Length: 381
Image (cartoon, rainbow, N blue to C red; front, side, top):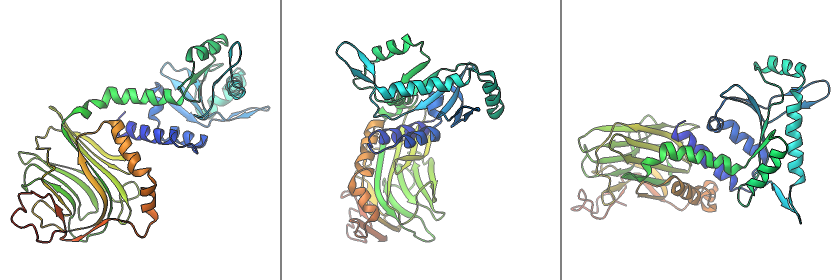
């Protein structure tokens, strides 16, 4: 389970949970596109939308899943805004639709009590499913839910159906992410973000940002090369180079489209972590050999050219900045502040996008950048 996949899945799930109009089908699609959630539950095989068919019934559960020990279970999804328990004068009871979902899961399970049904299903899906598989029902949220009462009620019914909330799914993924990948968040390094529209600059590197003074060491560069690859290049204190790249295309960036870009490197004793994120999704995420580099480069930036002001550019910049390494939740807040804001959505459709336009050898640099202190006019914007 890699960091790129788990953080993309979490970001997507949190976005869905924050969207009241999200439908059950949206969550179904999320599970189908993020099989790592089933890995987090220890399942080794997943069948989406299996048919349970005989002469009397035709059912389609959301998923059938196989545990490490070979036992199969039913995995059924409902909505996160589903209320679970209601309070009465003397006791709490399940809402009627929870009772309906419970009965639905039991009906799916009962289908497999007939040997002929099991034989048919095993032949259809190459399985060896057992009689009376139990079920996991995913519904509702955790806040305010009396889990002990839910457990007691389900235990009284033999625990043939277990209840998990969407917060249980989220918490399980966040636990795995924190356990495996959160340690780099406290490391020295740099996060750079852009809201920008790259444009085609033929036959040369199109420079977005360069940090540093010297060409061959202590330098961090963002540019699009002449092969239409978005590049995040680091040159360390000894001249060692590393470049992360994302190709132009449907799954990455494209010209004349507004993008939210995040570039990050974190410096540990035994590795360097480097990533590129586009519109809230990781497209390049690598651990490489340790690099030694000056990472406090705020007074040494050149926006729209290289560190000596010779390179050209062609782009529109709405916003940009850099900061120390962010925690996962801080990055989510930044994404939401940029991607989910009405202003960003407006930019996508506006012909009058407010921005700074960089064309040719036009650039901005830090006020006290040593390479430009003697010539602060030049071709600067």
